[in-house]
Image (cartoon, rainbow, N blue to C red; front, side, top):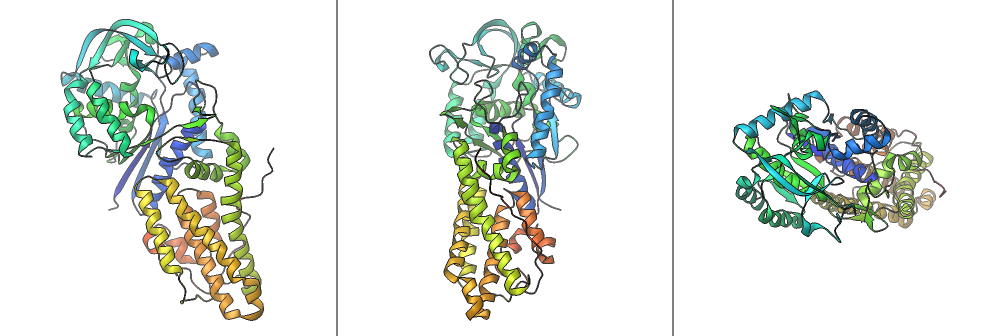
Length: 500
């Protein structure tokens, strides 16, 4: 039986259409899912949309439609993004689905049955953009530091979850990494947060909140959005044995809810705990957080339409630090596309396949056993996998770039076009090495640029590659490409694109 692996994205609000920040999180999760499948694991990948809360209600009002109509309209766009960006999610959860609503209401009863739900009066500041209560000390010049709006002061009766009851347990779990938070500095943030944790409001009156899941036994109260949203990670795999999650991939602004609120809820309800919470930063635009609320978003569909999904996937994983903030620049996108995809890899593949066709009729020539490539490639794989295990995709791709640059330098140093005139035997060994390097580079790229990976894979007509591509360990050995096998025609992988 295969080892199981379960990875999730956070679920974004549907008050607007997707921006490139969520596209990055979607690709990060998909890279993990694809990598684990390559290693032969039984993978479940979950994503979806968060469809309750005051800001969704207010966004619908502005458009003159109901909240559910807005959810239905925008959820389709998030599903479309998963398809366009070639995400391999196994299920797409919507929190307005009755299956999910039934689950969270049942979870509420579990928390209530444990004595961890209590009705109290509450007064505080509420940021609609963040969908959370915010303290005075968090404000900057009286405004939310993320959305730059003044929060609303509310005074109302809510149900509270006795989160403070579990802070000592949560601290022990985080410190001992039974629930691992990466990167390390985010773990320290969580431990600092725990010093300030109190019981939390888990409901709001229907008259002020408008749009949410009703509290069982009290229709006048609706579940606070995090109480409704976080359980999607279990409701989405009901009927399977994938829970607990191996990795929750989330943004840094929702760390508290995942590493503290969610863990407290699971402890109260008696569920197993997630193993790892991987925290990425923000994509910035002109030095500010990219946010629908701020109106400075990049549209992922535009980049997919112009450059292809693989190019967007690669840029997000290569250019944006995996576990920190990074800036999205159209100019930088064009540079990375041209230099690292079109030239460094695409042109290498075209040249080597063309020379093999010209000098050996498209037949993989005899391999050269006397060279330094096996050890060098082995070192690159070791570092690549070390970084992948640390969720550092950017540094993993650095190993791919260095190997690709070495392959291109090998072409220039060996000059196959001259060897064709003077030394056919050496030419055969050089072209074999180059084809084998392309095979390794393609396998490194497999989780990142799946369309390109498939194109190159099909161009290699060697059965061993097609049949055993899941057996990544065997494929990482040097010399798996069979001499005498026939190559198929390869198309241009990354066409030249003019800047508009």
